[in-house]
Image (tube, rainbow, N blue to C red; front, side):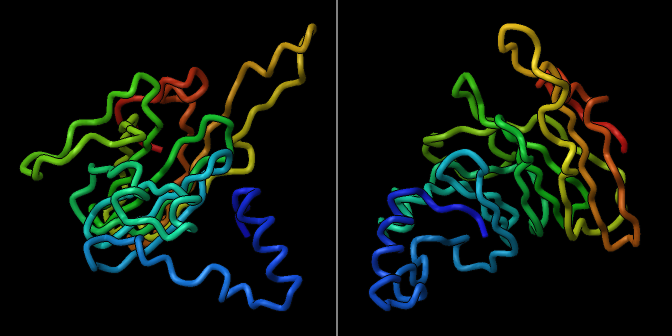
Length: 211
């Protein structure tokens, strides 16, 4: 199970020790919504208190976990709305790295890679979409992977998608990040993508590219 914020864990631990079922502690997240349409996937950011959801509305949404647990209104819980797909989004997964990428797979046969916008500038909304307020935590598209000829049903980051190489002298951090992603499609294939070829080792993933 994914880790919850420490304050939430502490509260849950106390209540659980008093015999309160966990279901009663957490309840249903009523503020999470994709405009009433089905939510197909959820994944928790590995280093911060946010999580992503994927919906049949073709959107990926980023949420503040602590605000959701506090049952705050949807507008307060929503951090970002990610638009790039042209069909339902079936799966979302964060890479197991310090500065994670988010991968999303869709019925449009593509996989989109996202990264938090360091300069606060988010990706432009899809053509024809309605104007909306700026995201509180902007994310941008860094690559679109095309090659499948059917719906992308699932995806997974390789365990090697993490910092490697031994620590250098003087506490120098490892200098390389390896990004490898596997995607499964209803076209009957699994594709393994070497994202280093797209600039993953430098943190500047961009463009498209085949796996």
